[in-house]
Amino acid sequence: MTTSQYAAEDTKGRGQMNSVQLNIVTLVNVQKATETGSLDDALFMMDNSIGGVGQGSSELETICKQGQVLNWIVRPIEGEKRPDGKWPPMPKITNLVFLDIEKGDEEDVAERRIFTELKIYGMPDAMRSQYTSVYYYWAGAIQSTAPPGVYRYRLVLELERENSKEKLYLNTKRHPSIKVIEV
Image: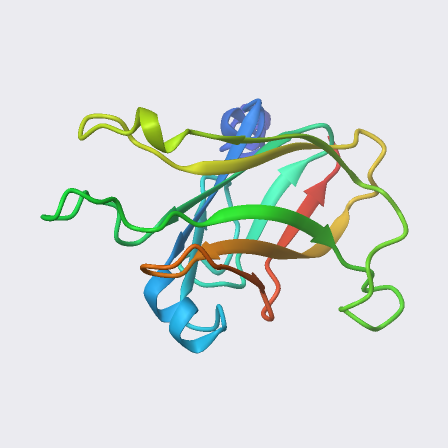
């Protein structure tokens, strides 16, 4: 191989790693989660990172870089307006907690801050239409000083029970992660 071929091979796929934001989309089977009181087998995650693993599972590993903005988007699997004119219950992310795997206990909250929360965003129900996609999301930026490595996190979701005003709060038990790479 020539030097120019090595250079071309080395830069393959880097354009996408330079993207400003990554989206992590989580589909929730709200009916199953509220019936069982668990997100097990009711959560399906995917992202637009290069090289991540676990697409379509609840143990997604997203590849990102220091300083990158991440958007966690959450939607119900059933997202269409029903024949009776009502919308299905919408899941919301109420918290995203990074875990301290250095202590060996993945349930401990991380002491080191690697993420700066930007804000919780969402579309009010009153603005729903058959032509507009509606979802809730959580955004934040990986700190530029975050050491490269794998960081597991727990999603805390708020779910509405069908035909009830009661809210149900569930945590992921299988933990997705982000893999921070050096810029």
